[in-house]
Amino acid sequence: MRNLIELLNRSATDFRDRVAVVHRGDPVSYTGLRAKVEQFSRGLHALGIERGDRVALIMPNCLHSIVCYLGAIRAGAIAVPVNIRLKPEEMRFVLSDVGARLVVAHERIWPAVSEALKDVSSVQRVLGVELEAEGVTPVEAMMDAPQFTPPELVPEDVAAIIYTSGTTGQPKGAMLTHRNVIFNTRATIMGHRFVERDVHLLVVPLFHVTGLNTIMPTALYLGSRLIVSSETNPRKLFELIEQHRCTTLFMVPTTAIMLAGEPSIEEHDLSSLRLLAYSGAPMPVQAIHRLRELFPEVKLHNFYGLTETTSVTTVLASEHALSHAESVGKPVPDLKLKIVDEAGSELPPGEVGELLVSGPSVFAGYYQRPEATEEAIVDGWLHTGDKAMIDEEGFVYLRGRTKEMIIVGGENVYPVEVENVLTRHPDVQEAAAVGVEHSVLGEIVKAVVVLRPGAEANESNLRRWCSEHLATYKVPQQVEFRDELPRNPSGKVMKRRLLEG
Image (cartoon, rainbow, N blue to C red; front, side, top):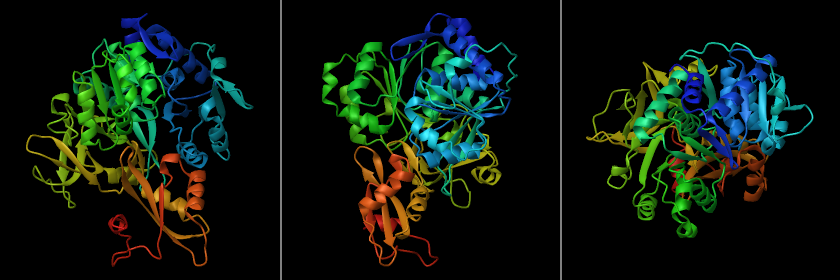
């Protein structure tokens, strides 16, 4: 199997009238899904979308987020799922940087998208999902275009570009190939042991790699059923599991913690569940124990991955969930991991250094960022930027990050993104952002600010300023004012000192 469209075609042939996707209670069969994908791809072709054009998808989890993703790829375009939590100026950067030629936007996100589209010269057409607005063509109007011969897709072709937080303050587009995604599909089957009869509750976003590259294509490959939702409320999740007899649920630790503490759990029949998986941030050990108490027969999987490895890199199987609760598991088959010191020398088991990954899941590079790509991939090894240790048994333990990234409820935040916004405020002389522990979100952003002489900005002013320019999860929840920032002899801000108070 060489690409995602071959995967879809094979499944539509093998599973035909079996339900593939359910959204808002409406089922779509495998043949129906293929038909919708083909219709959308024909519409794109009729609009002049050509091989290699970038099609941005800005929508919450819904049927169209799958149809438009696969349809764009079938037309030969590169799909660019965009985080719907971004502020307009953040979206504008992504759309401009990737040179999006066409945007598909959902009604729910339209206010931000319409603002973001200002001054983006590359975008020639906007399609709307459940959206009526001036200059926007409904997706449904594109579904009756004539047949065409889609381009041949090879494993090395880029299927999607997903933007990650950037160490320099601007995100970078990670290019993921068909080979990457097909490998990740097989790795998911081996690592998470997906089976054909599964009913997957898909609530993790389809603009992140877990939903896009782990759950969705693997379910379609096996002929399983996807229950697609954006719901995160524990009670609502329980209702969906009970209603659809869901067997798996993937989530960020924030959601897992809320599930573990939800008092209504006893009111629902959750006996269909066989797998709960969590990733994206450290998982508190006490929450794992609580999940085991609540779901004694359910498999608990921790796993680790990043955009640049397409998704799944390691899996901690259920039999080790408690005995190795602080581990993210062992690498999936055909991936190699090693730990190196600052000089690049491999370290023995038990020593902490930077985690490197090699294998078929490693991305093709950053879009139009050759220098960043060369820095990230050296001699076939991806430098993850994560500090880790591998023990004698091969279990991987994360020990922090070499790049100061903050993880808020599973979303990555680089401090420099926050610092750049703060220092644009007229009252701010300099600022530093750090992550502080939070019982539910894992971490939250704290800003330490030095005001200009005579300035009078307060915490409320600065948080409001940040909320106008940053996604909500990036906005500092704490702001501390100081006369100066602690620096080492070379002038670098000592972030650790900021955490010491």
